[in-house]
Image (cartoon, rainbow over all chains, first blue to last red):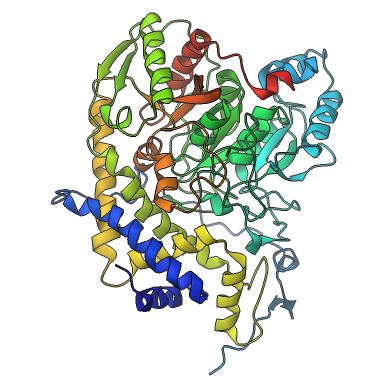
Length: 94
Length: 469
């Protein structure tokens, strides 16, 4: 069971502002989903290695050669607010 | 009925090369159809063809909105990216353009590829061309609907838990989820990076092989991509002599609706009729696939989607400090399902819960992959229905997230194991298409295409809106 307080805590971690309605709904929906997911706790998984990547590749390296980077103005183009060759954002505040 | 529009993509490419059909004529036909689309399948339609010469020259390609195309609106179905025109093009799209296929348009999709019905798009749902009151499946619903309706000769989409195969099944077309790493993910807007793969959605198996041939290859911009170990051949098998098919009871029994089961059983008879051998194989952990998937995919998504913060691209909201800009932008830009998955993933990765959820899910993933490995020691391919049901009604499952998630029950185990699988039309149930799924070991795409082709000839599925369009 995910209560209101937990929902608000996770929402803060995820940088999501939820309306009161959304908090209500999230609490009940996440609880239902997690109930289903918890079935995997019935499995015996001792000594089983976790899989984070399905194909075996390791140490994929490339030659460390200088190459041209993207032109600054092209990367700044889609920005909601670009100024002085950078992304302008509000002050982080106190 | 336009004869030109009845050609498969491979036939059209051949006729263009033989100068029996002009590329201009084909472009105009599909450009007009895409612009007139009334299924909400397209997000954007091109004015002019943009590709060079090559083996696919002149055959227009519909591209899921998840792919970045330089200068072209690429929103991933999300309001948070509204207005975004990327400064670069995805490798897979670039390769297909270089092979000659011009980008016809960008297709609608579930927001950030999260969904099985296309109802999670920030730009409205897509209608299934077989029955406009039903969903086309998702998340590549726009690509599947466009190909099925005949407003595109072929398309590309992406599959994380079934997002190519399930809509292909629900729209009566062919869709392939390739081996993980076979196709570069560079420029594909990330959902769950350890699962995402892009692949073809086409009218037939030959078209899928042809399109796939020009997508594969190692890309220096995607360190998880791999060189495909062999040439992709166009399929030609007429029999299934000596091919061993595994039938897993876990994915072919419980939860499969009767009409789908009937078509599936009929298909098994056709496999035997073509000389294929059927054998029961066990995939004991695959019923836990959905649970493991709905930990792993949201966990990866919660990290991948942290980049949408109003700083570098897309929309920006809030008029206070930096934190309120992040929170307001994400509150305004993300839809309900995306928020749900970000919350689920953040929770699963949060302090104290990591091992119980993410750690366990990754171990289930190992067991699912081991099951397949053991099965493929006995059989060449595994056959199942693609979707437990035919296309459902719009709105039918939107209030019950878990019921929606179960739409991927048969397709989720394969990406968890990184293996390829194709969906081909097997027949009709209640006048709606039923998909048959063939899965094989990593890099067995040629074998899959051959078997799917032989089966396609035997099934002789000659229905579909595109045939009458």
